Amino acid sequence: MTAPLCIDYRFDTDGGASHHYPVQLDPVTLARIAPPHQTLPEWTRLGRHQCPDCPLHADKETHCPMAVALVDLQDFANNLESFSVLHVTVSTPERETRAAVSAQRGISALMGLMIATCACPDVAWLRPMARFHLPLATEEETIYRAVSMFLLEQYFRQRNGLPADLTLDELRRRYQRLHEINLCMAERLKDVATNDAPVNAVVVLDLFAKALP
Image (tube, rainbow, N blue to C red):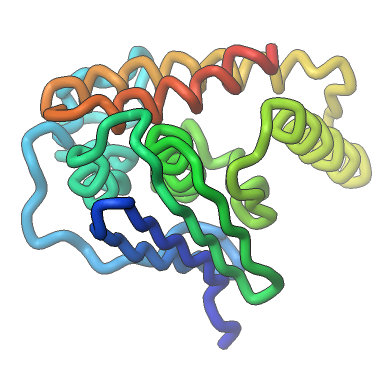
């Protein structure tokens, strides 16, 4: 059996608080491998700020899979102010990345990875981006990676006799949908926020989602 892909995040604050977040991905599906939570907070329930046109239904799914993926991260981020300094270390088998950034920027980097690898069917197309995760990517880097990934997908579709979109219209549609999802997730997090870092981390992600179209 092929070993899981590992992306290891560590956050350290100037005040001495620390949070270690190892992310393991299935090497085939690129879905996150994580033990189930024994209990889940109310803000993760599917019907709470549910996205418009959500493909999931409350009679089959009790909780939003994206919200569930963010529970532990939200608990840590809720103790942080958006512009407090966060020392971020990201380790993969290939390299280690270190940076001192604002809390909202550091949290958004891991949040993007967690969203891309969660069980929400509306964001499954992001998983190849997670496989080649670039911590703390700039707007230009994100746009380049997203467009490159999409065009590679179209190449393989064409090779398999499927329709291929070289106009990028479908990519634009996907990011417009991602913007809608981000807005709903921000509303969920606002309901339980005691500090602004978790909500503003979503805002940082959404800046990328709005920039690409």
